[in-house]
Image (cartoon, rainbow, N blue to C red):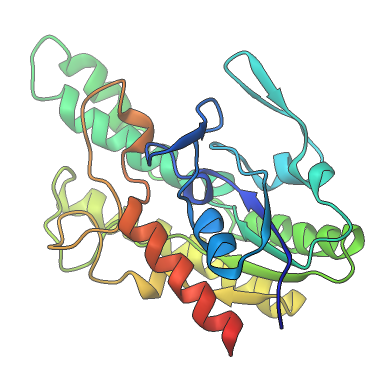
Length: 256
């Protein structure tokens, strides 16, 4: 089947903060995220609605305020003629990236006596154990709403690239943090699997595709931690190689 109009929905793992070229700095949206690479490979039109920090709620029916800009619910921008819609969201519903970043900064601040109190305060917050059904239900509603707006669209859920590999060095986390964060990542991936089964949507398991390519691996597909406010948005997010790997897998799956 030839796809003519691709639509991308999702959060930062779909938007691609820090990957040049930047097409919307406020949204953290890259012109080389997996949706752009996929549309180029298919020769299709692209409507990229991704916004870093998005939840399933801001995709469905809530506006999203970022800096001085307000983005309408992403679904409101889905055109009726869309025939392929990709979705990467749900991690923020479960506090995934926020927790990874919080603990990385906590460990960084604890190195100096000047910032140690702040680091200790950040480290005290536990790794959240939110009900995965929150993300499952949100993803299910997104799939159903897309099918209502674009009845002819094939919907593909794309889960999150692996951030922390079991066999990779734990730094910048402790062993206990590393283990807890990997467990949180598995809950996020599990939510995608359940939502795909419930809705019949296609699922690309980027989490499995990227095993061995986490932070600290020889060929990482996600950025490591950089203690710089200017580059903080890209920390623990997909790099160009990760986006390319997802796009290539999507092309392969669509061809079969």
